[in-house]
Image 1 (spheres, one colour):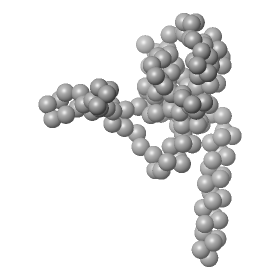
Image 2: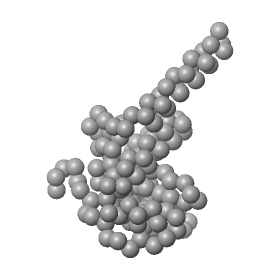
Image 3: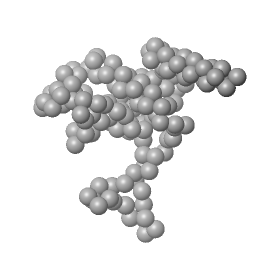
Length: 150
């Protein structure tokens, strides 16, 4: 009985993973703004299939790996001043959470795919790809479009 439960759970997780990887309209990138600093490549607006739009998702790349962070907000201390780490970088608190690491990784992978599809239709795609491979980004990207129409 215990083995069947694990097997059913594994089947469910596999189906969920396949649904995310095969369903092209789970998430789409509706705007992208390039901003290269360290591992940061830019910020994306990601629209989920239910209509929810996540603003300011940060797109990162390092060591031949890409990932997306959901939006965050700067952390403030008791005096309402920005909190920073030892290196002076602003600390951010998550505003969106995930049930577990596997779910977060699946979401990030789908987001990377959505951004890649958005950029492949854009003139800056080669520049972003070059930056991910250590190259220079010279072309100017088109202006990020807001889903609010402004």
